[in-house]
Length: 160
Image 1: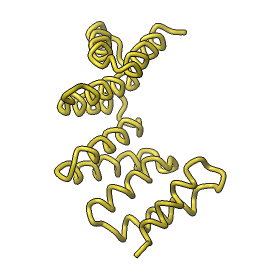
Image 2: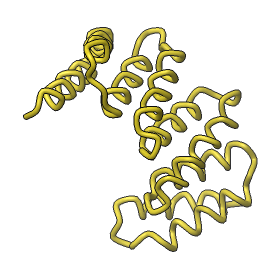
Image 3: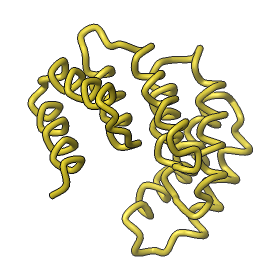
């Protein structure tokens, strides 16, 4: 196991045990010492979100730094979009923008597309939401683990 992998494992274990401040400290110390990775930045964002009270500014900064490290990494955009959606209406427009970017960077990955469907629905873009959900369902193989979720989403969007 590489030193980076050990660090990721240790931070993940801290987060699992709700030792969020320790996880955050470890990630930030590693950053200061020159250890850089998207995975660590995403863990930093998780630690910031798990603090009581949550550190929204810190989480958003960690997501932005992850994106800056690897601009083509769809997961950083996707996770940031999910977080923005969870933070309420004032962040929804930005969530849509970030999730659209995640989808643009990974058009074959269903996760950012499914999350974008939810963001469209929450912002009143119902037609776009339904169209995208139906497209995802058409493109997903029936045995894909997200197929049931996509099916339920289409049914919910089409329900009166």
